[in-house]
Image (cartoon, rainbow, N blue to C red; front, side, top):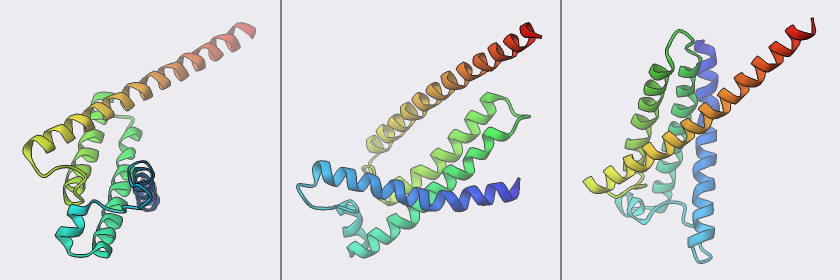
Amino acid sequence: MKKKLLVRILFGFPLGVFISTTITLMISLGLGNGTYSAVVPQLVEQLGSEAGAVLLQYVLSGILGAACAGGSMVWEMESWSLLRQTVVHYLVIACSMFPIAWFTWWMPHTVPGALVYFGIFLVIYAIIFAVMITYWKRKVRQMDACIKDNQNTQ
């Protein structure tokens, strides 16, 4: 279990960097007027250099990817209820993402900005959760149908 967690964390770091870079590229292509914006201007201003800002975002994006990949291990805790798995997973992801989003200026540094950020995060999490629950329920029904078909043909 520990080895599997370590492998996921190590795989999650470059995946987090890739996702972050892809998002900045898509935003730049859509809103950049022909320029690439690797980080938000507030982060460059705060750190005093674009290179430092990009480095910080790179490292924090990797840490976020590692946390998300490692946090996925809760779904393998078969002795836990679905509610417990969901709450623990949400807390791992939210507690990882919020400080990273704050330090990288992915959200406004105001109380309303933080509340809107958490609201959007919660809605996206709930949508993904609902889609995944629906998907797995369908898969279970299909497996049940296959089992019944196999029992009827014997």
